[in-house]
Image (cartoon, rainbow, N blue to C red; front, side, top):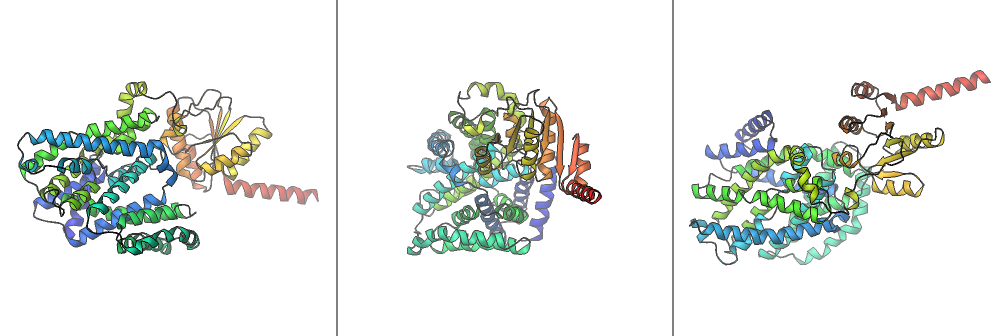
Length: 524
């Protein structure tokens, strides 16, 4: 990649950060500036962009629970939104055709429906980037948006396979053998350790077993990378692998955003058409929000997920690129749609950055449209009768819960993010609710009454403890907060944030061991 690309990307990202916009806005702007200066996409840049998208889909798969795709609010929303978007997009393009734009005059027959289909997709790259920047990939609205995007990706792959001359070869029938082979791959991932071998394993899985293998047998390689990630997701080290690949993926995605900006400076009429299509974006986000509300989600979840999905997509470009060789659309539509996608990122980035503020402004109106019975994962959390809350029900959390209940007679509720652990603890008689203290959705659903006098931070990571303290500050009622940390240097950090009692896990264990040993020695 040319030095000018690297320098421009850094300058654009720095400028965007300075005005509190996501860096991707700066990368897009840098691409447009480079295009105006006479630069164009290079094979090296395109390769880097493709690597970024492939690794992105692979890491999405590593965090994806396939069962989430079977929920009505996921597949129902994805299917209904796509059907309505195709119709609305075709009608809008038909109306714009009356303006006399030459590009639209040549688009007849099934062309408007095909363009409506291309415009119905939302950007996976944009949504994941925004969610990661806000540290809300694990939130309910974040998981919901990602699941809808995966469904859209499946729709796109089906269309592209049907539209192109390339058909899956006979060897594609052997791809299901990856399912019984998956346990061996997961075992290898769990035993390979960390560091460079783990990163190399991820690259091989995504690019060789995923992209290259599927592409070799005539199936879209991006789908292969996504499916490999899904097959590896149950592995214990899958989250660690996703974290290892994070920086690599982020760096390659810079090339993706640059390449969109470098598609070329379009004609004036194309710019007008792209701006006109941007007027449909609010309708697109509002339609997602309305459908989520229809499928019994809260207003906040519906609005934030709709905002994350309120863009046009790079997959729309792929759809148009597949239609051009068939003669269904003219090649000029590639430049027009590329500009539309880029501008949709620029428009949607500030909205997503201030999504919480937008929600607070429209919350009263949204709540009127909420269904009486919400989906289980989006209902208010009931803490009635509890006097203590234990955040994190690992070994330390369970020990604190047992001590509160058995030695002090304090009614407690445990909070645990892992559904399997929640189910097991409930069967053992614990009162446990599913939730993640780092998730703003959890605190928005939690009703912390005056009865709760104690909160124990027993999560394994300091990030969770700090997020919980920050959220407790916003609740209003502030109970006594006690925390357990794994590193001595974290004690001061928690106390500075307002924790009343903080103990060092290993230090306390060492002191207890020494005290018991001395008592036994003195007694002997």
